[in-house]
Length: 300
Ligand SMILES: NC(=O)c1ccc[n+]([C@@H]2O[C@H](COP(=O)([O-])OP(=O)(O)OC[C@H]3O[C@@H](n4cnc5c(N)ncnc54)[C@H](O)[C@@H]3O)[C@@H](O)[C@H]2O)c1
Image 1 (cartoon, rainbow, N blue to C red):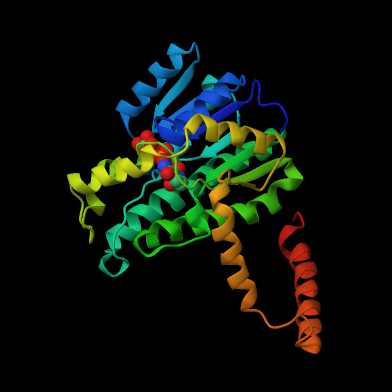
Image 2 (cartoon, rainbow, N blue to C red):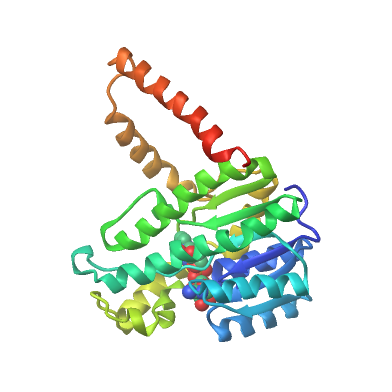
């Protein structure tokens, strides 16, 4: 999408941080902005901040894990502004601790918001975008942790790997509808993500990790050194205009990613190791793709 002006943009987590930066930058570029967030105080503050710059946003209180509420939010947006063509699956949460101490609640909450919320955004809006027939763009916020997993962030990373995998597949599937997909992988952003635990629902309150003021302060210190969310969103705008698969505007990510992919490639046998097996597997895959196109994708 070259011109976002006049397009309806739905930003989850738009009340704070990365999402608020996206709301600001895309509103400046002329998009009609909807911010959706679980925290009313974040929504109120975001609307006021945008208004201070002469920008408007329609705010919807939404828990992205609630599918019925999500569908109702999409209906509301269509009544107010029209069909969403820019979907920002941005809202996310994180909590860190020893993986071996993790509880099912630690898994269910983070996977539910970070991956489940993204799934719900896709399931809600993609059919509407396709029906509208005028193309669009989906920006899924993953993380550098979607490539590089560290122990204390194991569940968070798993949820972001999932977002990345789904996004790559979705990008291939939606190209024919002129709907682009970009995965945003920030390393560190100056946001309120240290406060994630405040939105943790009661039914997932049994955590295996410690959390106290000292941990909160320590997290706040790291994130305060992060990139400005507005600068990050400006990079996202460029990535959409160029229809890039990835937006990773962090030079310090290069070396760890090079090492990571070098390690992956080092685990492969040489290219000429098994010519007969390769031919057999490739032919079978080609045949399967043809059958799949016939059986699954052909209109009935
Ligand atoms: N801050 C970083 O350093 C960093 C790094 C990599 C990736 N990210 C990703 O950026 C995204 C945005 O996070 P942020 O850093 O701006 O944090 P943030 O806490 O400032 O903003 C996230 C917003 O999402 C909202 N939210 C949380 N759960 C929700 C739910 N269930 N439904 C609706 N809204 C919900 C919060 O209320 C908050 O306003 C996340 O997906 C996060 O994983 C952040």
